[in-house]
Length: 257
Image 1 (cartoon, rainbow, N blue to C red):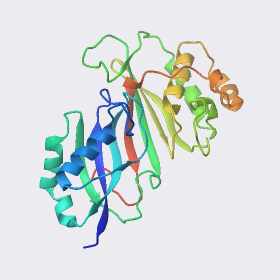
Image 2 (image 1 turned 135 degrees about the vertical axis):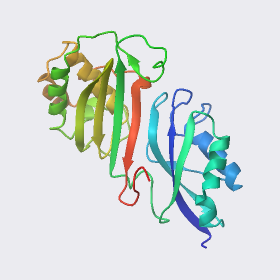
Image 3 (image 1 turned 180 degrees about the horizontal axis):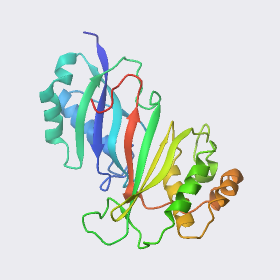
Image 4 (image 1 turned 90 degrees about the vertical axis):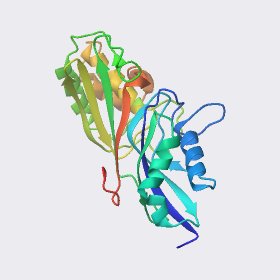
């Protein structure tokens, strides 16, 4: 047994009550709560590092963070009862799904190869979707045009036009693999997958595509918007309540294990 061992923890959370994932002063975050509960269970100070950031009100059905444990048996950390103990003290809107032993150099953020998001829209008032989907009172969205515009987005890799202004990014280049809308019984779900995402990128893309669906923009105008590299030319960011981080891929973790 080494002095320190790294683990990944897979969690899911409803983000309504939290000011995003990342710990910050004077605001409740998922990371802050998770670290407190892990520290209690393992009886030592735990500082996790997440696979990315989610904004206030954004949800995650799959999220990974890594943390290091000092002088505790690997088997004890990954024991089923340990996971039960963590879940027993986590609030009802956060769940721990699994703990995986990884190499001490493994990194939850930098080692992720793909990330997937969904954005949920519903068209009629539904109290059971409040805070979990965006109520958009338009039934006549042109979904064909929205998907034509989404296909155009797939042709590009510079997403400066959909990035929050003054964001401190090393690069605005992202490799998209999926960008499409699917109809549901009373709404739409937007699916998008990429190797990385910029801050506010998905919500800005959704807002722009909804403008296409409403006839405010033509699908082919997406080329001009993207090539302008100007956030002001894209649509408004949609509300956080409909956004879900749904999948994180690593080369050394079997998702859904």
